[in-house]
Each structure stands twice: as structure tokens, then as C-alpha cells.
Length: 362
Ligand SMILES: Cc1ncc(C[n+]2csc(CCOP(=O)(O)OP(=O)(O)O)c2C)c(N)n1
Ligand SMILES: [Mg+2]
Image (cartoon, rainbow, N blue to C red; front, top):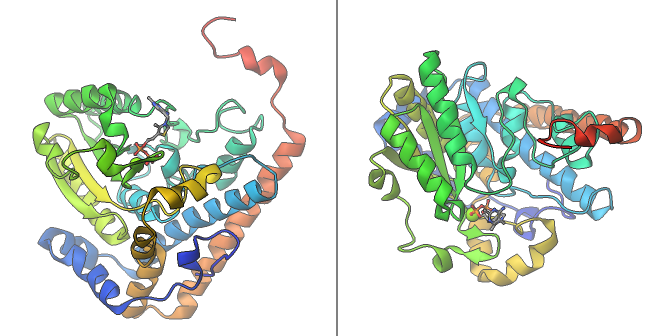
């Protein structure tokens, strides 16, 4: 993809595929026979759909970062380098019946569930026609089967357990998927929700989104022994790990988990490992660079989920013009959404009276 020197992490600006990593990318989902079958069953349209999802997610972040740098908004929570964690699992679901509950770093999930990109931007701009009515910068709308994130990390887990229980009671085969950050796993509510989901065997997928940092706290400062793979079993849940920078591995793992949920076999916890290539938000990128050794950024920078996937697609015989056409289409889609959202900012400020609507007491 086109790189954006003013906004991309420096490791991505002159990104080149490293042959060993490209080979490992193709090999990873093939190690498990079931995942291999899922990946081999993807046709070109599905493969390019995953590519479009990654680009759409990255380009929304690039737009937000440009807005921060040009004073349109004051800060943004980005998922740069973590796109595969979001896009693979969402595209493994069935939009019409399944539900997702992203955290702010998974905001790319909204568009992949069909929510207009402009609505994600409007949420940041606090416009009256944003799904939140201008009240909250967490994006989501149930019309598109996306529940808005709850700011208090971990609190969404019991809600997800309840949504999945509701799906089981309706009997419509709906699966509910959420992400739990490595830091969020430390909250009491996350534990309660996970236990409830396991005991009631609800059709939920919990993706442990291990980006190895919780705000400014490195993984080894908040988590022993440093691995999450044992967590599913400790709840009596099915579980599996996947490569968080590999959209195919993420997709296949979630696809199999969703099938298991639909068979009534209870929840699945998927553990994905990745790395946050920016700050907690745009305000602390410099601090993030001081929080981790430079080698971490160098190592994970070589594993750009988009660059590696492009190299994989090329190896699978998809020609450069096909990739470029997808990128041009997505770039246009994001640019149009930006224009629409900025128009809303001019024309659709929230009505002052709306501040007291939908609250418990006023
Ligand atoms: C209950 C609660 N405590 C503290 C915060 C402030 N806070 C926001 S995000 C965050 C770190 C979350 O880490 P993690 O779950 O790993 O998610 P990540 O930011 O890496 O995506 C913290 C401490 C919060 N939002 N909610
Ligand atoms: Mg984290």
C-alpha cells in the first residue's frame, strides 16, 4: 500500500518484505489442518475482502492522525499494526446475525460490520448525527450489530456474555464476539463475565487482544507468567492461539470458533499476540517509544500485517493491479466518508436539549 511518512510509524515508511517472514506468514495457518482447510477455501474475492478490510482500518487511522496533526480533533486511539486482530475475526462472522463488541482500538470493526465509515468519523467529531448523538467517542450502533464500547475496560465482558446468552435463548445461531485487552483481563468484571459465559456455555468468542501493553504498562509489569494460552482452560473454555499480525490465521481461528459456538458447544477464547506500533493514543507516541526497547519496534515493524498480507497475496498469484484497484477503491471510500463527516460538523451540531435525553435523571 501507499505509505504515509507524516503519519505511519517510521518502520512502515520504507517497508520491504523479509522473505523468512513472508514464508512464515503462509505457513502459520497451514500448521493446523482445520485452519488450512479454511484458508485454502478462500476464493480471490474473499482474500481481497480481507485486504480491503485491513486497508480500510489503516486508512481510517491515518485520517484520524491527520486530523490530530492539523487540529481538527485533539487525540485519537489508533490500532496501527493491530489491524489483523480486528479485521480477521470480524470478517469470519455473519454480519446479518452475529454481533461484535469492539473496544476503541478495534474501531475498524464498525465498518467491517457495515456501519458507514462517516459514522465512525462523526463519532470523533461529536456531531449530532453521529450514532452517539455527539455524546461519546466510542463508535457503534446496534443497527449494524455493533455495541458501542464501554469506556471502563473489562465492563463489557459481562454484557457480551448476556448478549450471547440472549442469542442462545432466541436460538437463531447468533454468535457475539468481543476483544479483551491484555490489561483488561485484569479486571474483576472481565473475570465474572468470562466465568458466566463458560458456565452457561453461551455462544461467545472472546479474543484476548494481547498487544503487550496496557496504556503505559508493559506486559511483564502486569502479567505473570507472560503467556495467555493457559487462560481458556482455567475457565473451562475451548481455546486456541493465533498470530495477531496474520489476518488469515485470525480469520481461520475465528471461523472455526464461530462454527463451534453455533453447534452449541459453548464459548471460545482466542489468544492473539501483536504489538502496538503507536502510543496508547496519539498524545503519548513519544512515551511509548521510551516504554519499549527500540528492537521491539524494529522487530514488530517488519511484521506489518498489511505488508505481509500483500506479499502473501502476490505469492498466491494476485497481480499488483488487482491490489492497487482495491486500494484505490478503499482510499476513495474513506476520503468520501471524511468529507461527509466534516460536513456534519458544520451542519449538524448536537442540539443542546439532547444532552438531557436518555439519561437516568435530569
Ligand atoms: C476500569 C478502567 N480502568 C482504567 C482505565 C484507563 N484505561 C483505558 S485503556 C487502559 C489500558 C487497557 O489496556 P488493554 O486492555 O491492554 O488495552 P489496549 O489499550 O492495549 O488496547 C486503561 C488503564 C479504564 N478505561 N477503565
Ligand atoms: Mg493491551
